[in-house]
Amino acid sequence: LLAEGKLREAHELATKVVHALEVARVAGPFWQALAVWSDVQRLQGRYSEALVQVRQHLPDASASQDPGPYVELLLAAARSEVELGRLGMAQELMDEVWARVQTGQHLLLRLEAQLLEGRIKLASGQPHEAAYSLQQVVERARAAELVPLAERAKGLLAETLCALGDVE
Image (cartoon, rainbow, N blue to C red; front, top):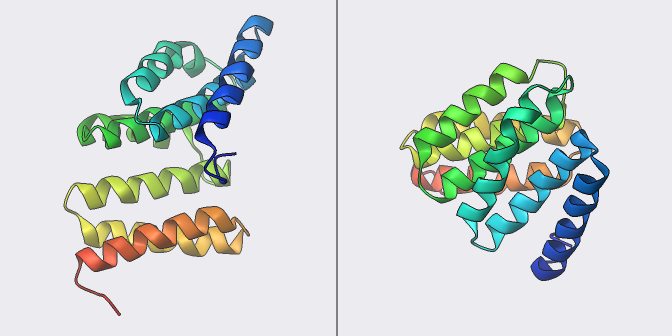
């Protein structure tokens, strides 16, 4: 639904899924659904609402045996912090992401994190570092056939190269 730009429908579905999983007390999938719900909220400009809900559940998710859902919540929170211009807070969340994500595990999450790290670097006035990071995401995502992620990284890389004055 998000790929089709149907934010209202995506919000309704995400809200229903989050509620159902919360009632069923299924922690891991609930946190993953909450991360998606938060991203929908962010895309609708509801940054604070998204952050309140995600931050409320971060302590419980951090104690989980599987770091995946916790990392997804951290990334959702960091994306909202970037949108709010709170780059220091976003970077603190990213530091926790990197502490939890191991090399060789969770490729998609690592690449999503690296993409967001590139965005933070660009917004922080570090376009050279951003370009390096984003180029790696493009290459690794393509190699893993993660086409949508590769294309998002490619778009941000183009923006970064423009900031550097490299507009071939």
